[in-house]
Length: 370
Image (cartoon, rainbow, N blue to C red; front, side, top):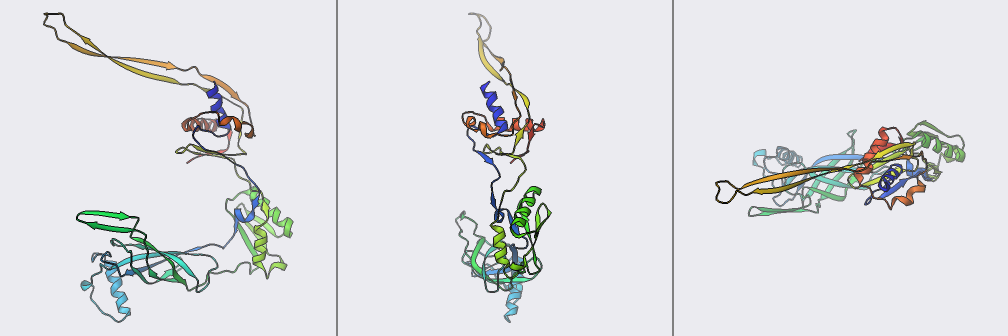
C-alpha cells in the first residue's frame, strides 16, 4: 500500500530513487533574458579555398577539384601548368566557415573553421590561402587566410595507424578580416521590435504592459512572439540607451504547464503550475517463476533396462493483491515534496503512470518524453 501511495504522489510531482527532482516555476526576470531586439543576430559565412604546405598528407591526384583549383590559382600568378603534371599531396581543398557577429565593422577579425572536403589525411601544419567568405546573399563579408591548427594527429606505419581527434578539421583564431560591415540600422526609422525566445500570449502581454507603464503607450504586441515599439523622441539620438533601459525592465514570464521526463537518466522536471484532477488508480502486479528439476530412472538389477534421465518443470504464478487509492484534485504540489525523497519508484513506473494519467485526461500539462 505504501508503494502505491508513493507512486501516486509521483504522478502529482516527480520522483525516482536515483533520479534528480526539479520544479520549473516562473520567476521575475529581465526582458533581456527572454527576448532580443529583432535584426540583432549573427550571420553565417562560407568559402572554398586551398590549404598548402602539408607534409604529404594532402589530397591525392584523384581529387579533381583540388587539381583544377591549383591550376586556376597558378594562372592568377602567371604560371601555366597542365593538370596532369600536378602532384597535390601537399595541398588540400577545404571549406571555410565562420560566424560574423552583429554590428561588426571593417577591419575586425573573426575566427574561422577549416574542413577538408577531399581525401586528405591531415591538414595539420598547413596554411590557408586567401579565401573570400560569402553570406547567403552572395556578398563577400570577410577574407580568410592563415595557419591552420587541428589539435589532432594521425600517424601510420607498418600496417598500424593511430589517430587523435580529427586532423582533417582545423581552426584559425582571428583568421578572417571583415571587409564589409553588417547593417546596423537599429531604430533609425523610429521603431524597433522585440522577439520572444519562447512565444507566449501572456508573456507578450506582460512585457507590453511593463514597457508602457515605464515609457508610455509605445509598445504593442503584434503576435505572441513579437512586440513592436516606437522609440520615444527623447531617445531618438540614443537608441542604445533606450534598448538598455528596455532590457533591464523586470517581467514575470508565463509558461504552459509541462512535464518533461528523461527516460535514460530518470530525471523528471515538472512546472509548479501543473495540476491533477481527482482520479482513482489501481496498482497490482504478479510474478512468474519456473523451476526445473532432473529425475533419474534406474532399472532393476540384472535387468535389460536402461537408465533414463527425465526433466520436470514446475511453473508457479504468484499475483500480488491489487491496491486502490483515490487521489484528490490538487493544484499545489509543494506540500508533498518532503515526502517524495523517502519513496522509491523506478523511472519506468513513473513514466507509465504519468502516461496513463495523461491518457485519462486527469493530468493538465503537456507530457514530453526525451
